[in-house]
Amino acid sequence: MSQMSDPVEPSPERFRAAHMKRLSWMPWLYYSLKPKHRVWAEPWQAAVQKALMEEETVELGEGCFISPEAGIFAELGRPVRLGNRCSVAAHAFLHGPLTLGDGVSVNARASLDGGAAGITIGAGTRIATSACLYAFDHGLEPGRAIHEQPVTSKGITVGADVWVGARACVTDGVTIGDHAVVGMAAVVTHDVPAWAIVGGSPARVIGDRRERT
Image (cartoon, rainbow, N blue to C red):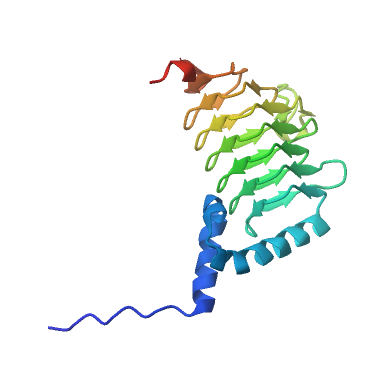
């Protein structure tokens, strides 16, 4: 019977590369790094963020984490502004105008497009994996082809301390109140009151956070 060999300790370079990939997909781990890992992680992030701000009209607060695999686009007149300690994970797509308050997290593969009117997200809000917020819409007039329809934009406002669940979608013109929860795969087409829990397609109120025990 063959014996299993002892696992090979990865080289420091391989360990660091694997750790960077892990952080890119799970940015919340960045904020609990040990000092020995911050020695390389903080300069890495400084370089990623410097390159981004040189390429796009992006403003970043202190202590942010930006995955190098995220797509953040902010041409002139469509800025992206992130407050302190915001995080953006791998394969997230952010297109301005977009303003994130302090401590907002945007998880992997989330898609936020500000249209013309923009998206504003309050402090501490969580945008989960593959959630979509689109602050624009296309006309549906039957006498014109879809690609010829005019595009409209009213904007989206998401309050503070909100949780937008995985694969949830928020349509143009919607306001979500502070402390609300949008359930997984919900499609939000109307305003959501503060503290409400909404779910379904189209989303409807199914609870209140203040009544949870």
